[in-house]
Image (spheres, helix red, strand yellow):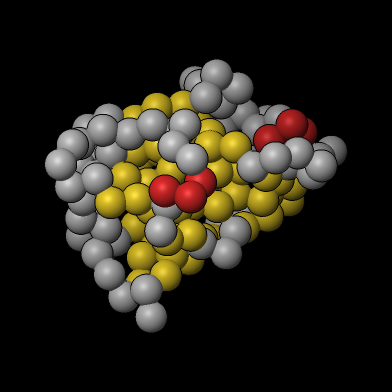
Length: 129
């Protein structure tokens, strides 16, 4: 079965850190761009960070720049999202999604969701004192 599985979510206090993982099962991550999405309560899902298939390019939305770091280990078939200095507004369900980009090593957080063929089930992150 081809799937992505997120883990690492939880309840933390403001200022603390979490590391999310997105593991591929049944396929390799070679030539897949990976985007981390976040859906906050009552809001639409948004892409917050992405990483190109080689890991050479990353992008972040302004609200997480300087606090989140995305990385990947293609041998382990896993993508990570290190989230530091967490704020209450970072609360939400975090999803990873994969789109095949074999012809260009790039990433963007603005692809329409319909372009992603593989999604994880999501992991809850709650930042609260």
